[in-house]
Length: 112
Length: 118
Image (cartoon, rainbow over all chains, first blue to last red; front, side):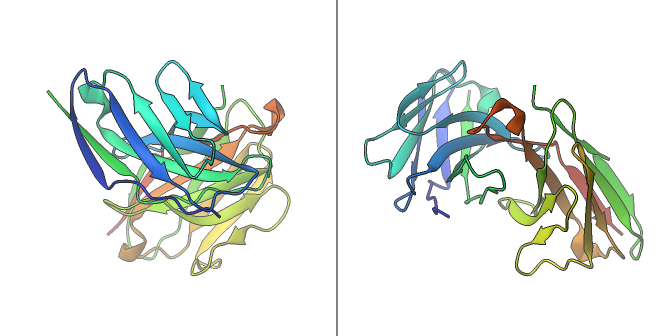
């Protein structure tokens, strides 16, 4: 399983764009990159998933360079409610039994 | 879609009792579900993989006789913490994938169960 490395914590202010980068140097050919958000005392919530280049949905964008050894989650115009822990995970989505190995995550604090 | 529900959300019980936690996929079928444990300020740690109709697969260091897993149907997996002790107090979370929508589907997580053993 590919190991991921993220910054332990980040601070931002309301209205700013936040970019959280994740390193996954030993990502495998069949691996996808998935980001989750977790609030205290809640289960992780799916944010976005991608394989290469750029993926965008209604809440975030995911940028993946050609070598796929890293990825960047971009949150546009964050609000106080975006304060949470963000996890980057790498795994084979084609494998029905593929479990997820969580790294340490990035604790994002959004300030007023 | 792809909702995973856990019950109960919070349980407090005396040391030595057994506690059952349910994980249901509400709008899809899941042949595989996963159970995680999370201690305060720490990341999620995979405990076991629950397989419908067969034995669960446990991660190294997780006692299978302590944490009993039953996956009797395509929409329900249960985790029973037997003879619970204070050190078993933790946040337990399950997850599942909706394979009915094809490959490349992400895992969806329940809202977790806070277990407190007195």
